[in-house]
Length: 233
Image (cartoon, rainbow, N blue to C red; front, top):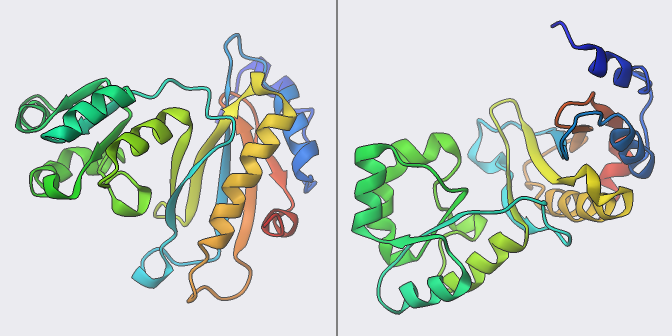
């Protein structure tokens, strides 16, 4: 892959073979963010599990103390009093059959998270083919299927993120913006890693965190010592 001059210059600031501690890695990540916009800082964690097995899945959600720096648009699929609760909590889109119809007929996905109540899962379940591939399908483990819809909406807007394994056993998550500075990014990072470590499946054997990399949107990856990352909790 051919990279631009800005990326090449940034990559020179990273020691490719070095395993950084968290603080130093974030400092380097911030230093190598050269884009003209406020880049997102992302964490990529490869785990020593096999996502093909149901007893080795790693999935959950956590509220980052400083949020993600992103405005989250919420779709609440609910009825009755929950409609009022969702509105008061700040959901951008609220509805039931009307929203489901719009998603099914128009492929509408102009939102960042879908939150619903257990009684609506019969309706929401039909939307799996559209919401699933985009990571938008509500799930009880992620706290997006709940009776307390107001709290779920407020948590999402406050910086709640979902972490889950992809097919290559890697978790990809944002932990904030470059403008947050190292300290806030470090605190967000530690909360995320703590949640991932605590979610370690009983069936997982050997080294749990195989590798951990942080990178800004347009910047090079900076490797973090996986042993130190795992000891955060």
